[in-house]
Image 1 (cartoon, helix red, strand yellow):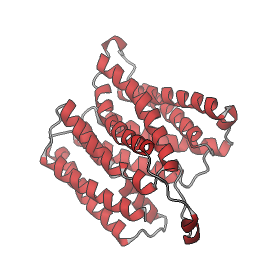
Image 2 (cartoon, helix red, strand yellow; image 1 turned 30 degrees about the vertical axis):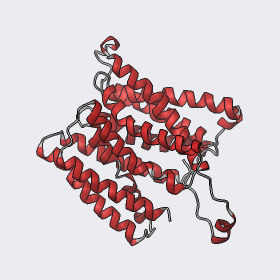
Image 3 (spheres, helix red, strand yellow; image 1 turned 90 degrees about the vertical axis):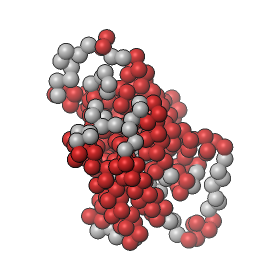
Image 4 (cartoon, helix red, strand yellow; image 1 turned 30 degrees about the horizontal axis):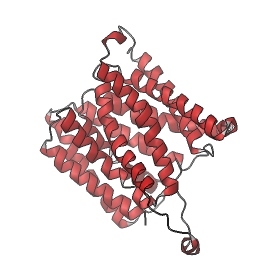
Length: 311
């Protein structure tokens, strides 16, 4: 991923506005629905499949497919990377894929998909905290959004404190969102391959291989019987590979080049709403008052942070 750099007023004045076409709305809808539905897909996968082994297999498959797509679309030379770039991609992949996604997959063995999505929605808040720790001074409105969002997280963790869901699962999702934020923050500081698709392919492969290793260390392979995997889990895993990791990401990268950042960034507070709705409709997940109230607070806080930062 690349974060756009600030431009001066002269550049802004001479840069044409990006036209919002039907293709832009289609890609944005894909990001909204596909990324919002990945939490539901993960929940269905872990019903019969081991968490880290399935997550690792997902990203290894997606990474290989993306590698082939990059070589076909841009030529084999596009896959070249220096040792430093490759090392950076591996580090970011471990933080994002193994830490950020892997812990969410593990947590969803006991935490509803909607609650997991709302907890992960706090990622922009943790990024602001990381920025502040490095000497950056975000606007007061952004800091206010972080404080409000933290209050929402407190409400969202109450199901774990009350015993409605496992507290360990809730804490795993919080840790995952922090690691995802650290990976996103690091990606903006490190030297990564020039082609964003190449960098993402290496990140997926590194995180996927690490996920499989963690799964083996946890003993997920002992007594493993693929025949016991449900058809729903297989379909959900395939959906996560093709739609979640390839279609959704490709649409997102294209949007960064074709649409205003202010429009693209709205996915941050639409995805959790989609995830909660799908979890309730398809898996009959309960919409308790902590989820509704805490989720509303977090989504509103993220909206404040994103709207302030994009200015």
